[in-house]
Image (cartoon, rainbow, N blue to C red; front, side, top):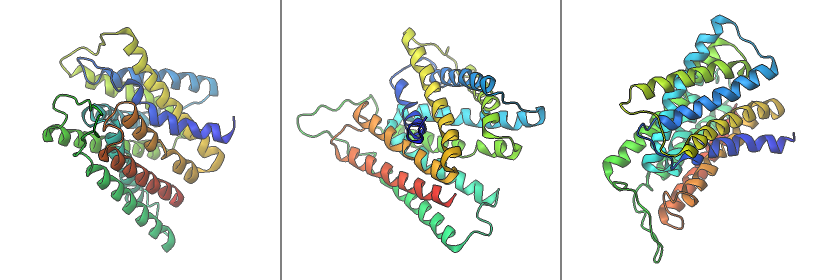
Length: 305
């Protein structure tokens, strides 16, 4: 497979994994995450067996813990995308994810220890650009009126300040946990390929526990919704393994940088497929611009790595 095709896996896999089940609803709002992580676990098991990977018992539990942390972020990401839309949600949690991961890398793993002044300056520039992109997206949460002649589809309560605040908080929470789950995995010292299966089991266990504490069954009214939720997990797994292959081909920094383009795919899907915010509005233009700026910050961050 060519490097270009491999690069498309994290860009489109991670850019669309939430979109395919965005309008799927259940009495249990965590149901979509559950069936997504179960599908991801199935893919991880298949890859684990076919590649002959292995792990030892001491390394299993730290990686499993990483999966538990991811499950909180996954549930928060789905909830945020339902509350404030996929474009705004991804526009918040991806930069927060990058910033939190950068912070942990600097303070826990001393990644910039002994770094040149140029690397430190590039890191500061990346952080500033990420922050600017997030602030731009936050500024677009209001003023979403459609242009003349275009009907705007709004959800009940969609303009409520409390609802918007909840969505932004959920998106930030998703970014926090997405930027943190790698810590126990990295501390375990296992390879990313070997970590994929125990991590997927942790993701499934954590999401199942979160589903069970919610007072409603994780069911859907239409059989096809189970398939779409499962497809979300397959797309996430494709993005994950694509990222691993890409970093093997071209290096961690360049591969990480390219993967950040998934935020633009998410924004385009949110705006032009789900009309959140509606296309050709000022809010849509601001959100898209913020996502592009945040992606640029991610690319710079990848160059540091």
